[in-house]
Image 1 (cartoon, rainbow over the protein chains, first blue to last red):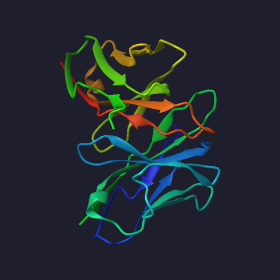
Image 2 (cartoon, helix red, strand yellow):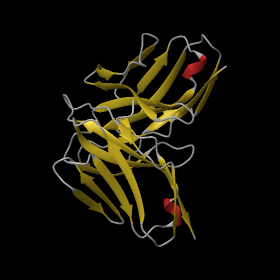
Image 3 (cartoon, helix red, strand yellow):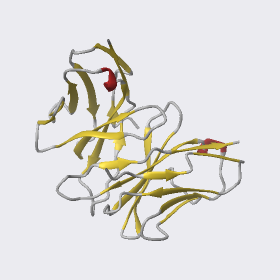
Image 4 (tube, rainbow over the protein chains, first blue to last red):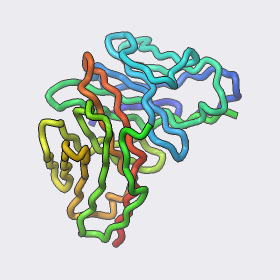
Amino acid sequence: EPEVTQTPSHQVTQMGQEVILRCVPISNHLYFYWYRQILGQKVEFLVSFYNNEISEKSEIFDDQFSVERPDGSNFTLKIRSTKLEDSAMYFCASSDLGLAGYEQYFGPGTRLTVT
Amino acid sequence: DQQVKQNSPSLSVQEGRISILNCDYTNSMFDYFLWYKKYPAEGPTFLISISSIKDKNEDGRFTVFLNKSAKHLSLHIVPSQPGDSAVYFCAASPAPPQGAQKLVFGQGTRLTINP
């Protein structure tokens, strides 16, 4: 069964450093997303991406964040200068608006720890 | 932001009985509702969804009910099995603009199935 994959599973970085989180969405999906979950809190939407551009972004997704689909398979989230409060689980998701509906399929997540 | 609320942080059910998880929402623009299941250290796994034009959707042991006038939905699992023990998230989405829609999640309900 096709699945969303994410690498790395755990990333530790120092405050102020840049990190890139990587995702491989399900191959025939057209819509891509990043969410995050700070420990003990809700899963929060960060950004959606379609047709090589951002469709929507949340207030969290400020100028320190960027997304890119550098080739036909990868989808990346870059945090330019990490802050302590960026520590969270980051989930990539993808979806396809076929007859199946609007379901988003999530990857296993990357745990980002900023020290 | 409490647009989607799951008021029960935890629920304990005996194996073989029915589990009922509840979710309320406030935004009348929500058009599509989903339930996800999450195990520790994994991403959310899609379970079942329902469009606002329906009031019930069933898939095997899982049934979702939607009451639009009350802005309430519920997930019924029957019979409950030990493998159902997980955190369950309710999520909602507005009618998607150009197809890429964000999901708004509830806080989650931890379901424990007791043998």
